[in-house]
Every structure is written in C-alpha cells, then in structure tokens.
Image (cartoon, rainbow, N blue to C red):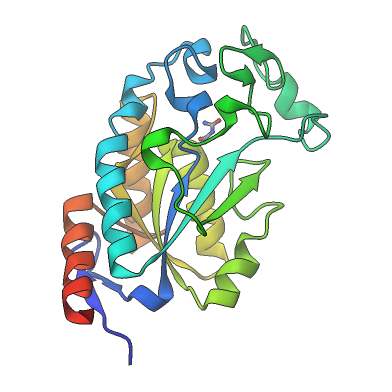
Length: 230
Ligand code: C5J
C-alpha cells in the first residue's frame, strides 16, 4: 500500500502519495523569464518571474528525491507556425510577435534557445517535456494519456504565469478529474495583483479548482515521504 502524507494546505489538507502524484512545471522558459526576452519586450518586469526559480529548484529536487514524477511543459509553436491560430498570432500590438527574431532566437518557436527551459530548472534525463501550443497543458498534447498510463491522479502545479498558463492548466485538470495543489511561491506573474487574486480564485468556495500551499509545506511532506520510504 502506498504511503501518504498530508500537506497542510488551503482550504483543507492535501494527501500526498508518490505513486499517484506528479509535479508539473509550467513554461519556465527563457522567452518568458530572461531579461531581453519576449516577456520583457512586452513591457513586463521579468524579476517577478525570476524570483520563482530558487524555491522551484528546491521543490523539484525534493520531488525527485521522494520519487514523485516531474513533468515539464513549454509553450511554443512549430517553425512554420501552422499550430499557432491567427487570433493568437495577431493579438495585441507588441513590438515583437511569436515567430519574429528576438534576442534568444525566433520567439516561442520550438528548437530555439529562448523556447527552452532556464538552465537552473533543466529537466533531468528521462523526465517528460510536453510541448503545448496553447495556454493549457492538456489542449493538443499527450499529457492526459501520459498521466493515465502512470496512474497519476493528483498534481502539484508550478510555473508561470499564475493567471494564464498555470490557471488554464489547473482548470483543464480540474475538469478532467485531477486534484491540483498550486504551490504559491513556485508560481509567478508579471503582475503581483493577478498572482494574488489568481491564488485566491483557486482555493475559494471550498477549493473550486484546487488547493494552495507554499513550497515549505510541500517540501516538508515530500521529505517525510522520502524518510519513510528509506
Ligand atoms: C503566457 C504563460 N502568459 N506561460 N504564457 O502567455 O503563461
């Protein structure tokens, strides 16, 4: 029988078992995080996202030590942009658009330097990396099949940005029957107010989309799993 440890979370404790849980790391890509990248070219303060990196690196290390599956996602498109809807491509009036040359290669195009994950959070050999064309990690990807094959029903959700890809993925997962805990200091937004309200929305109404806890609480539970498994 699998060992389970309760994470103190809002609105209620969240049971954690290594076999049925995955840590999902959403879109921690250079294009969104690095100075001079796409995110900054849109006028955003990338410092708001960079502060997520140290606690998330510690959380990923604790998940690996506890035997929890770690999955990564990247938002981006084929080089011919055939999987980028015109509505997404033309939205707003940015200085640079998806597919344009940027400081780190063509913006949000697969295979380009900027599309990949920041060095500090690089996937370990064998960890799944889901390339997604949309905001949600379930839309037009193999994520649901991978989770089903692994018997995973509970997700620890991290990454950027809180109110866009983290929220969309959490909502998609919730509708598909997954229990999701969003790790408050391991998700980030260019807009502190959206981050704060985004977390409130997840845990409101008895946990309408899921649970929220900080990385200290999750790491303590992961370490307890690691110790009891040893
Ligand atoms: C955005 C994301 N914000 N990963 N993408 O365009 O949240």
